[in-house]
Amino acid sequence: MAGATLPTPLERASAPASASQRCGAAPGRGAPAAPRRSRFSRLPLRSAALSVLSLALFVLAWHLLTTYRVNIYVRFMNVPSPSDVLASARTALASSAFFDHVYMSCRRILYGFLIAAAVAIPLGLLMGRFRLLKELVFPVAEVLRPIPAIAWVPMAIMLWPTNEESIVFITFLGSFFPILLNTLHGMATVDPVLVRAARCLGAKEIALLREVYLPATLPQIFTGLTVGMGVAWVSLIAAEMISGQFGIGYFTWEAYSLVQYSDIALGMISIGALGLASSWAIRMVGRLVMPWSAAR
Amino acid sequence: MTAIPLKRPVTTETPRGTAPTRGRIEIRDFGLRYETAAGATDAVSSVSLTVEPGEFVSIIGPSGCGKSTMLNALAGFLKPTSGTVAVDGKPIDGPGADRGMIFQQYSLFPWKTVRENVEFGLKMKGIDRAERARQARTLLGLAGLSQFENQYPDALSGGMKQRVGIVRALATGPRILLLDEPFGALDAQTRLIMQQILTNMWQRLKISVLFVTHDIDEAIFLSDRVYVMTARPGAIKAEVAVPLPRPREPALIMSSEFLALRRGLMSLIREESLKAMGGEINDDAMKGLAANFEGQDIASAL
Ligand SMILES: Nc1ncnc2c1ncn2[C@@H]1O[C@H](COP(=O)(O)OP(=O)(O)OP(=O)(O)O)[C@@H](O)[C@H]1O
Ligand SMILES: [Mg+2]
Image 1 (cartoon, each protein chain N blue to C red):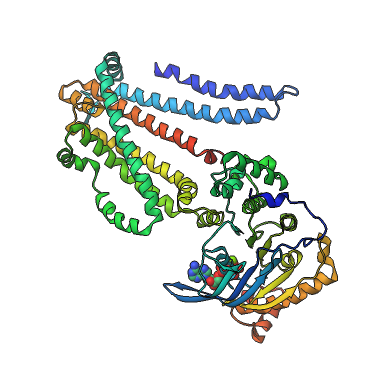
Image 2: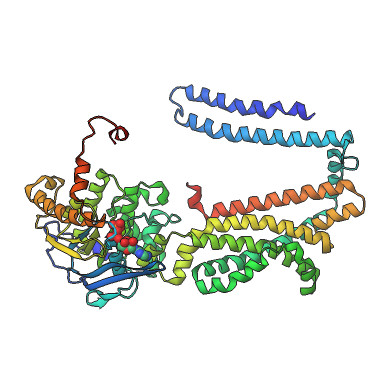
């Protein structure tokens, strides 16, 4: 089945190229546009075709391993097959409970991550600007940073009155340090000539931060946000598995306890999709706020 | 408001038709010492120089003699260790928009378009958006940069970037323009064009210019006066007036007056450059340099 669909994207990949060559040969019509179009369309199509191929091969392998219940030290006996997962996805998507779990996780990520960004970015900018602040805060950050957010779970439950708050706190902690450290690193690499140029043009401290340091640091800030978002998901899922009552992490763990094996895979796939979607969203926001780097 | 100087009636004859009265640079017994972990370095010692209002003055000197240090003190980034640095009688206290500066490195903000870059100084003055845009457009038009106003600096050539940098520095209407080897990274042709643009702007705006360069031709071609500095610690070795008539055409550099000035400056600089490189080349070394290997490679000659 998968084999039959495969050649199609590959055939499609070569089709536009020849079409545009024909278009280029047509007299007086878009001759300069033709090579540009073929270059632009062939490469993304090729890589899209290869992505589809690689995913299809993965699903195929999964399908074969589970339908033949392969058992070579690693045991695929109880692993749900793709069609099992598809079936349980149908039931899950028809129920509101599944969406509640997804919604809860997204809300926790959003709160934890946004609070982390709102604290870490200004703190990083100020620490990069004022030595004293950096020297005061950095030691604490260095001591806390190596502690994985998951290790905070018991402490978080003690610290915060509600379960919800402690999970958001864990998510916050997970994304806080990558954002802070990347912002700091960005501040350290701001070109001093740009700062001096701004000061010669009459910029004072606040204007320097807003007009020079912040935009100069944005690329690193977005690196930090992307990494931070990844760690936020890792921390969230762990926290939900340990102490949650809702959320996609809890859903996945509960599926294991209730011996609903296909829901485990469904939970995992959902987590992957959510992680992918959130890093894509950060990339889009990055492009929006840094139009100059898109021009490069 | 601030870009108004450009709107004054333009006199094309002599630059000093109406003599400007502001923008006098006065450096007295200036000394600057860098304190580093490795010890103290005297970068500049007891330099005195003046730039009269509306004058174009160049500084040339060997590498490391403290030219940038002096400009940075004028811009307000460094405090003199000794002596005074003053503009119109007032000692300099920190950087400000009354002194425009052009750096050797390109210093346009990559995250701002050409027009936003030019608007920057006006924005810092609190001028509203519409007025800023209007003034920036006018200035870019005068500099022939209108078609680039919405581009980001990364899309511009080196010469274009420095041109925008000059326009940006002039936008706030400074009395003084400080330039630190601004055309050092440009090719010879672009450099000539930039020199003419700079001369043109200077004549129209009647500002004082202090121009650092290591290019003797450039210094003579542009300046009313040239200061030659000694090797580190930098001091003034000589002050040379350039009595060449203006406007100056590129052909001027072939004239005998120009060449005479050039010869004089050349020998002054040469002495200092040799010192900066660790003393005079002695007779033995000269002999070595003159040795003829008669077609052998060095290894077999030795
Ligand atoms: N921040 C600093 N700390 C210590 N020493 C410095 C510092 N900046 C410059 N110096 C030293 O001071 C001297 C003068 O430096 P400066 O940059 O002013 O020279 P310059 O004349 O502009 O040289 P160039 O022609 O190479 O640009 C140099 O010997 C340099 O090594
Ligand atoms: Mg220098």
